[in-house]
Amino acid sequence: YFWRRMALTQISSNKCFGGLQKVFEHDSVELNCKMKFAAYLPPKAETEKCPALYWLSGLTSTEQNFISKSGYHQAASERGLAVIAPDTSPRGCNIKGEDESWDFGTGAGFYVDTTEDPWKTNYRMYSYVMEELPQLINASFLVDPQRMSICGHSMGDHGVLICALKNPGNYKSVSAFAPICSPVLCPWGKRVFSGYLGTDQSKGKAYDATRSQLDILIDQGKDDQFLLGGQLLPDNFIAACTEKKIPIVFRLQEGYEHSYYFIATFITDHIRHHAKYLNAWKTPNKRISSGL
Image (cartoon, rainbow, N blue to C red; front, side, top):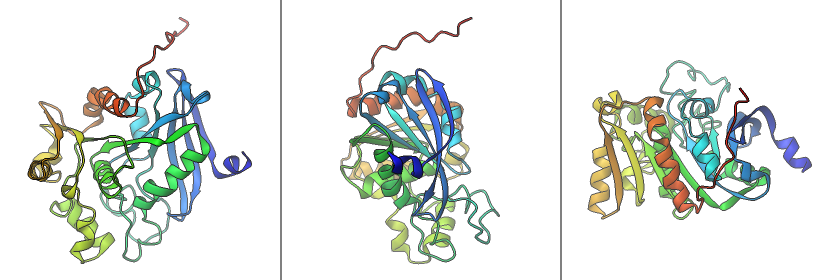
């Protein structure tokens, strides 16, 4: 108990659909800086271990974007899901160039372990998401380490697909909103991988989700500006799944683009998808009253 109190500093706590939406800060060993993450603890988490759903956000996001914009709380509360949303990169590391552009450096960790100077000391988001953060969550809250799932958005979905690909059996289910499917071929990925991983293309291929063997749910907005601009390349992923006879549900949603309005529209579908695999069935909640 003493260790838990020392490891985490609570930044905020707000009651939401009977549970608590919290934000914490801690000193990260992998990233050599202070990191924040959000944790939604459903009412069930007060008395019994709950399954955990990890959310990885996209470029420029922090731990705040998903928890404040997606509207996931009611579905997670009803199904007894703890939801963990980390920040997207190290911050304040005083690395030259870390704040010069929106798609490289701060807010753009791309969920890889970098190998190149000056990034390799801090930018180790893959190991943070796969090892350090789950260990911290499992030690600090009533969550079941055997029941984890993962989902995300855009750059975060690149992280989602890679984490699941490189660690078969680690997650019970996977889903994605507008994922960057083939970063070795898109402009974002080419820039980031050369900067973080160097010129050895084999390092980049290790973080390319078209090598996946997952059974997943993907929602993609048909009017997504980044889809139309060739940054996401879902056709590559679908082709790879078809070739390997891997089941995939890919839903192209007419009229939707890349924003959290799109995510908020379909997030309950994704919560249901994960709850099915996590054996987290819907339970009746007491009616939330405003008192007015």
